[in-house]
Image (cartoon, rainbow, N blue to C red):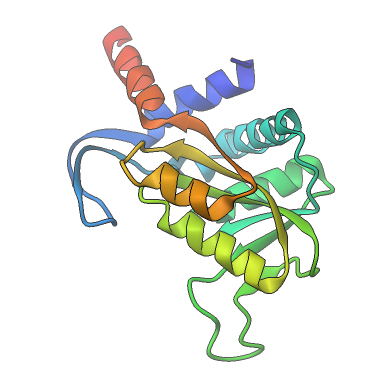
Length: 190
């Protein structure tokens, strides 16, 4: 694991991971919660997110014009990667079309036919990621890859995203178990 990836894992485990009883947006319950925004909106966390996502895109051989995802979880990732590259554009997918102004669902970069990577912070059921993929394709983007920061490894998450993403690949930077192990290791060392 690269030093940047290791440092990002440590930040997620320290700042974003909590044990307890939590209700999830999917309606289920869990003994842990991951709020990636406390890491992706952290100054150092944003730097690391930009670098780690860029490194993974390069490792996958994904040549993209832009990176984007469903607002709100994807927002800081999109900005971090765009700033890190200085060349990759960003776009955000609204949950629904605006009811005013131009009424668009895709904000930011809007070039039909462009090659894009879809990102999300946490993948549980995959619903947010699937919505972003569908909206990007409907707009006219070519989805070349899909990435999430943390995959919760729920029964339907990965299959839902992989089915929707085809032929593009779905990559998770970390799994919830990776973050849990690091969290427990950090707790034990204190």
